[in-house]
Image (tube, rainbow, N blue to C red):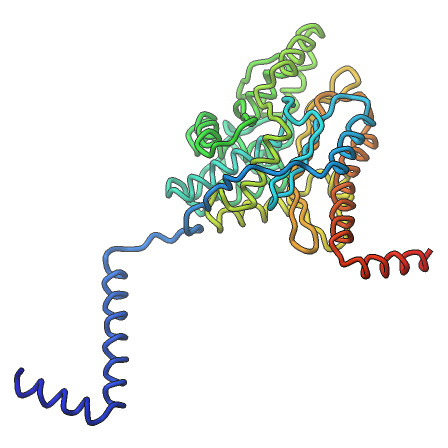
Length: 393
């Protein structure tokens, strides 16, 4: 040992406080040097998301509560037309359903899977939410597309991926959705994402403009981006062509999905199994802000509850409506979350009946939650609550 080292160690043994201070300095220097080296390996890419998706739950799901399954079936039967309902408690994994494995047309519910593919591309570094894209008249779609009014032939619209997501999920803008599909690389990328995530009972079918024009009995043309031109061309078709096109669509909807498949996917999304935590939060926040379907499930949401959802609404023909849907995540005041899918294939009943159906499912969930909490209380508390309720009557 050198003389300098011997002097150092004599000082350390004689003055322990000095030893402690030196140790702290050495540790800090080590961390500082490591941070400096990591920070200077190269420029760090700023991202909206961090961390991988969580592992999927592998344990078998328990059966649905018997009384709740009976209630779901009762609600479905009372509608008197083909409907599909599925409800799953996200944490426990059970699912109650009525025709839950039947395939129904999604219509704009399929925008959820486009959004999922976009956020997966963000997580993988293939897309960035702050990337700007340009929309020209060729990017117009059909039906509801508020963005189309902002596109001019001599002044293209510049917009970020994040804003396209907002328009697609909050307003159900078809042009925004179709532009997102284009940025991903086509509908096949969404289909591959669904498969890669292990999700079943879901499909996309194509862009909105492709699906909607084919359902009407037409083939997409750029001029149909002017909605009045599309509607004019559709109205000019012979009735038998429209009948056949709609029958083909309903028999095997290209955007078809099962209610059970949808609640399974929404449950996995909520549990953080599909995307990074930040990407999951971004997507669910947009679903919570959805402005469509105010009289569907949302009208039954009680104070203290929250709903993150997506609606779907198809065309009207011969006094009936096609693809009337509402799906989402209904969260109770205590944080318990239920994934819900209510889907109507084709209905001649009016909006009020459809709304009652969807609100009825949401209320059934709320009642189940309330009753399950009550029965979980000690017997003395149950008796006290019952006495208080009777006194209130």
